[in-house]
Amino acid sequence: MLTEKDFYDYFAEETISIGFVSTQKPEEPSCPKDHFTKLCVKSW
Image (cartoon, rainbow, N blue to C red; front, side, top):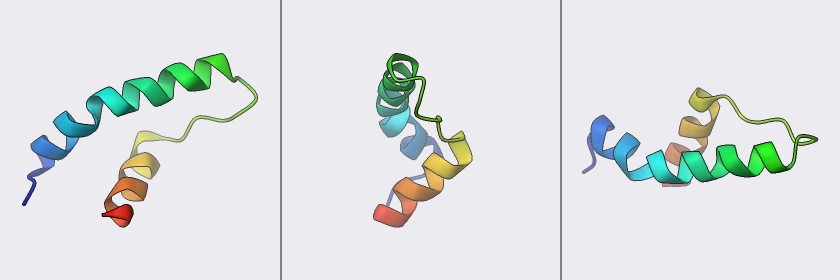
C-alpha cells in the first residue's frame, strides 16, 4: 500500500512531464494538481 509521500514521489516525474507538454500545447488547459491527483487515484 502506498503512502501519500510514496504516491507523490512516484508521480512527481510524470507530473513534470505533463507540465512540460502543457507548455508545448498552450491551447490545452493544464489540470490543477488536486484534479490530477484525484484522477490518478481513481484510475488505481
